[in-house]
Amino acid sequence: MGEVKLYRAWRSPFSWRVEIALKLKGIEYEVIDVDLSNKSDELLMYNPVHKKIPVLVHNGKSVSESLVILEYIDETWKDNYPLLPSDPYDRAQARFWAKFIDDKVCTTVWGALMGQEDNKEKAQEEVHKVLKILENKVKAKDSIEGKKVGYLDIVGLIVGYWAPIMQEVLGKEVGLNRDTYPSIYSWTDGLVGLDYMKNILPKKDELVAAFRTHFASTK
Ligand SMILES: N[C@@H](CCC(=O)N[C@@H](CS)C(=O)NCC(=O)O)C(=O)O
Image 1 (cartoon, rainbow, N blue to C red):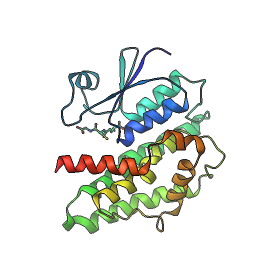
Image 2: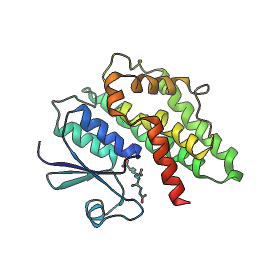
Image 3: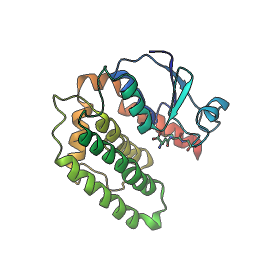
Image 4: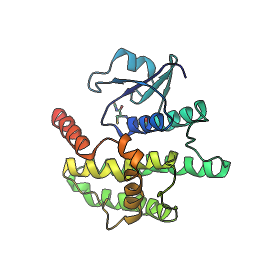
């Protein structure tokens, strides 16, 4: 197994992707909490390109970017709890939708959450456009119930679990709600409701508190 270290910020949905994967696979790891307002030399050495967390350091070698880290973990410990589908086409699809979530959904939702009031309508329109696409994709997906959590489920939690928390903390409704996107919410509920995921995922109220503290400190 070797030595596994995770440079993270506890509240970060990207860090949690990595932690969920490590925990599902039963890999022991050490966490190093990074102060993102005062990045350590170690973080800058391990991720000099993006200077972001999460960074996984395995036997002294670093891997950055959560989607890349997930694949690295899955390939390195391939016998415990496979995360990506075994079929190459299904794997390609999972990667496609993961990229869609990060490149399109996260950027538009984050843009709307952080954007100016005078641009609100346009930003919400953009959010709706991408969430509608994801909603239709998720509608066609089998229910998670009774199934194993996979790569795309882990990636998608940022939409159904973290983004509503951000709306609550920032007091800003950007159009992500249960009535408009029932499939995204029931996908998330299915994941969060699994007994083993309950033991892994951070509690919603603890995340709310952590984000409130974070945003209060950046004002
Ligand atoms: N695309 C990256 C995103 C990671 C990311 O945005 N990390 C944030 C914390 S949630 C970060 O390190 N921010 C520090 C900065 O931007 O300076 C991934 O998937 O790992």
